[in-house]
Figure (cartoon, one colour):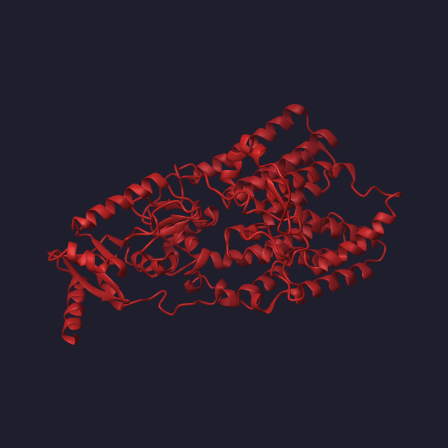
Length: 561
């Protein structure tokens, strides 16, 4: 409940309302919204989650709009009973905070049987600044999936039967991760493999044959789920930026704009992807418990042997997160870029935002701090509760005012969704809405050049109107596109417009920079008018309430002139 309450406070109650969509009409929230909407209205097909009407005629999918494929597919099943205006991502954010607290408490249960201490520890995970920093990417807020694998590793496993159940759970959550976000699937797969190594080599609950079967089966399950959702659908997966979208060596102590008490450190311009600040409360607990345990290290080992595979996995992921250009603040302290180019460069081109792979180590450190405190004060539960309570208070107070109360999620435009009422007249008479020039781009810069056309945010009202009217839409911003097909379409569209060829089933939304040329090229072949301050045209010769309304608006404009 603490996770749900804190999540609601951060994002605001209106964001959780599934009938509230205005907050998603901007930034990185828009692709998941339109991925879900256009998939919802599309017929069922394989792979699952196809959205052929968005970025039409190329199309896209839930996988490449970061629309949390498992979640959106489940609600697509319920679509006949849902209201027309309905989004799944606000409730998903709230669920992520709730599950963050639940699995954080399950981790703490590995170290203490006391419910209060489990609750306080779980709440500490909810208050992770790393989670707060990811609210702009709804599918990537599933940090609880990382906690699941830490919990599976840390929970007692006394015999072979329990080991089999544990690996079965790990496989299930690998499948779940693969249908949430590919980055989460990749990092959790490494954690799952470290669990397999522990159960095989250290606990000796698995034979080499069974361990090998699990180690090959889990990646196969992940790949199968990815294929089910169309991750291998011919898009351009290679991207630049591996050595830029990384994590910094200072990431665990760098407030990165997430503290009201401390300034952000100077780091690389694109290293926001690797934010993993622990927070003053956790750092304070770590200093207290860690120093005390170091003093007692002669009595008890600081790092028990059964944790070695987990620590190795987290460090390996962290090394990938730091990239081949390892930076301390803005200083490059070590670089192995030439070695990277001849070894794992293909992997870096797929997972260019490598900084995200710091999250397992971030949460492993948090779990280590909790474990150290509970171990240090195992005979003093009240003191442990007091220390955790103080850390929680510090974590809460540290959150900057501008990141509280859902202010980040307030809609910035009153015309979205909405626009001119004339759009409703197009329903049933046209099949497509075409932006000209179109903007079809992905997060890596592939796609149609966005020069002299609509920005991605300017295109959103028209994407909304097209979806409401059951029409396709030829623009959008997604994670990845098929660059070759996208460029070919843009060139074909440009050629058709310059030849004055208009499709009678299409509504054309024309950018001001080419409006005069467009009207000249389509003279006597288009009926045009101004809607929402933009030139909108349809082919002549096809009478419809919408074309008649456009003509009336155009005549009224000429009378005023």
